[in-house]
Amino acid sequence: MAILTKGPRGTQDVLPAQSYKWQYLEKKVMEIAGLYGFREIRVPTFEHTELFNRSVGDTTDVVQKEMYTFEDKGGRSITLRPEGTAGTLRSAIEHGLLGDALPVKAAYLLAAFRYEKPQAGRLREFHQFGVEMLGSPAAASDAEVISMVFHMFRELGIEAQLELNSIGCPTCRAKYQKALHDHFAARREELCDTCKDRLERNPMRLLDCKSPICQEIGKGAPMMLDFLCEECTDHFEQVKARLNAMDIPYVINPKIVRGLDYYTKTVFEFVTDKIGAQSTICAGGRYDGLIEQLGGPALPGIGFAMGLERILMTMEACGSAFPQQPECAAFIGSMGDKAGAKAAQLVTQLRDEGFWAECDTMGRSVKAQMKFANKLGARFSAIIGDSELEAGMVKLKKMDDGSVTEIRLDAKPSDPDSLVQVVYASHLEEIAGALKNQ
Image (cartoon, rainbow, N blue to C red; front, side, top):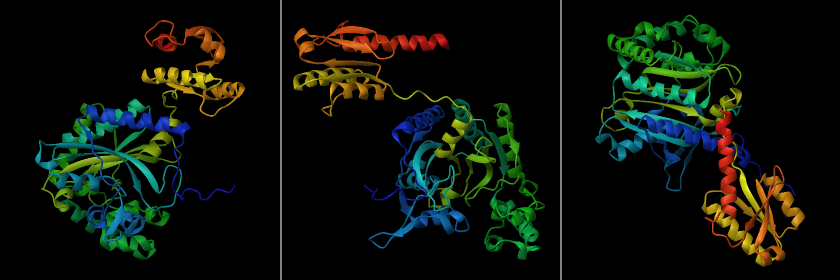
């Protein structure tokens, strides 16, 4: 039978054979975020389009080309979120979080949506982990969120280089924008059509262009670091000093401008060459005017986001250690309704103790049940029939070595000859063996 439809282009299914890696990654990053005082926030998948126009910036590719925007039944313009910062800040403002003790520290795991050409690690529906630290203007907060990424990548076995830059404040950036405009305007006719438009609206975005010609013209462009005001220079020096104190290595990359308009002062990226050409796997920075721009108090903020698809690709390329897939502790097969009920009782006891256990729910033959137990990779198996019910005993087979242990069918889970205790003993032996080999 032909499949009715396939998944939309630019999306992917996470199948059971891979989902345990996602679960491990999501749990790990949230645990580490918790060590730094960040607590989870969950925001809607869609927002009013105006939120992203005002926050992300109407000169960005995200707003101009990539947003999934539609009109709902009430005639309102709605957009699927292309990133997590805007919705998080909107929520913090709306619910008065910024009136609590500062800084506010929020972390999120979410799906985001951008209409762009699908490629490895870059999908139209993708997933992000990110944090927002709101209320602190100090360089120490910049260093803290960067150190958290460094900590996460170390724990995840990821090899990546921290690249750092400052794009100044609106005051010093205005002078830089003029110098940048003059540089590119001298060769305006050679620019791509997109950059011709950017030249008048936001010249810094030309530094992000992927066109070889625009990149060549940009090689001699002035650098923002040469235009920083005294305050921004001092802030950047403090960030570097704090990173040095924490033994976090970095390189200065004056070409980092970030793709969204709301950034100010510190911007950073973690890049790796483990998934092909040098690739950004985490990016972030400071956005001191964004909260006020969205209708909140005049408070600063800093944050970052990382795409989980790319993080998983990098972990695999770096040979990072993933936990083993969950193991089926036991498959208890049966012949007949009474035996099936007893098998269900036994697997329930195991599940109550936190073990994955299975019994037959398909009415298979004994041979087919054992074949299924092998496919599951069950550690133990047993078949209950009339003779086992009459004797009140069943032989439990350890699948890897064929050894057999008799268990009582009417034993309580705490009894030494119960199914639960035999499985527990085997589980403890495995843990002891793993510790011995470390």
